[in-house]
Structures are given as C-alpha cells and as structure tokens.
Length: 142
Image (cartoon, rainbow, N blue to C red; front, top):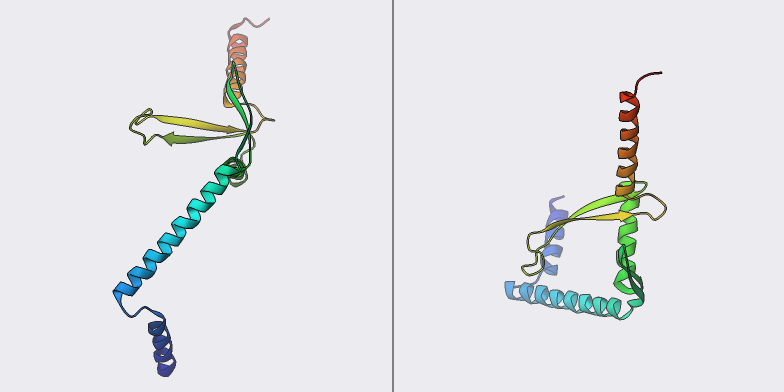
C-alpha cells in the first residue's frame, strides 16, 4: 500500500504547477476566460430580448417581453413554485443596495399564478368573512 500511496502522490505532484507564479498565471487565465464567456452570454441574452408591448393602465405598467434574460427570469420564477410547492403565490423580500435609488429600502415582491388570487384578494375575502361572523355573533338570536 505504501508503494501505491507514493505513486499517487507522485501523480498529484506531477500534475501541479512547479511554481506559485505558474499557478497564479493559470488562475488568472481561467478567470479571464470565465469573464469572456460571461460577457458573451450576457451580450447574447440582451440581443435576444424582445419587447412586444408596453402599456400603462390603472394597475401599473404592463410589458410583454420575449427571449433573452426575460426567459431565464421567468423560468427561475416558475421554478420557485416547484421548489416551494406553493399553490398560488410566493413573497420575496428585496433590499436595495443602491446609493441613489431608494437607498436602504426594503420591498416585497410577490410572484402570483394568474389562475389564483392575489394575497390582497385572499386577505379581503378573509376580512369580509370575519366581518360577517362578527355581525352574526352580535345580532340577537331569533
């Protein structure tokens, strides 16, 4: 076993760079390649993004986008429903790191399936039901 261990150690040492400078150069080259690939990916995703429609109504701004990073974002949001096993909506807390746009502000982003009800609709229904029960409890029994 001692011979096998020594042989494996020799193989590992032979595959490692001979100097720290060589290792640093390899790391730098890999980081550069990663950055080049990331930039190429981002450029491609941005080029593929299509804005089909943007309208403003009482509910806010509605945009219909296709492709590019929009597709990745939509898939990531959809995966949240799969991972969380939630039937209707998910709330995510966001904190701004910007120094110029709402610094230090925290927001809650709600992802909702269109077939279901919004958190506001569910709360309004629960409040209405509670009000009905309170009214029924206060009314004289007849």
